[in-house]
Image (cartoon, rainbow, N blue to C red; front, side, top):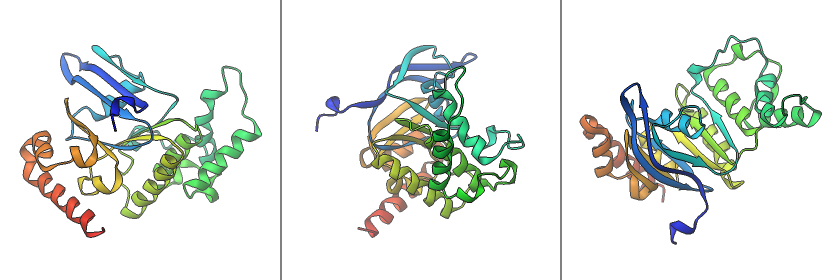
Length: 252
């Protein structure tokens, strides 16, 4: 199928972002079709979080642009959140509805019902009135996914949602996100666990300041591409790619 005719969820055109005088993203161009789960991959400092922030218009590019189609929901890194802020899980999820209320809008029963439904989707239905400071790391991650789900956005951007969670929680989060894909959502995930790339993602976007590749995971997540992007750690990541491929083939 000719990819140029597939509706696009995200498109970058010659995107360059600097912090001070240092290029974090350099002349990055790609597109992501609607309705896929994409792994945003690259070593530390590759510009992955910066790419998400540029898509959210939180930072201004030096040149070029990145555009998104439809509404966008964002799950930030867990460490960036003040978990001692005195609100309940329900109140935290309801924050995801504020963008649709307008300046003087008030929450309605439908908003609260949506928040409770989102908490149920992520397995936290019994925790609606618990203070967020009492949540474990995995529960906190699921809570912020619930806040994203309640927005019913077309595009979900998640920045390291699996950091600091156990494998069971990681699998549970992926099950939630696959259901969102079935509803036609597009999902872009900053991810570090290369052994699970082929299991989790339809597409891969490989980044290290500049773009190394963006496309179906079998085309992009190859030994040669990983070696180029991850440089000095090439043997480790090449081994990870081989393990991933063997794991996938073993389940076929």
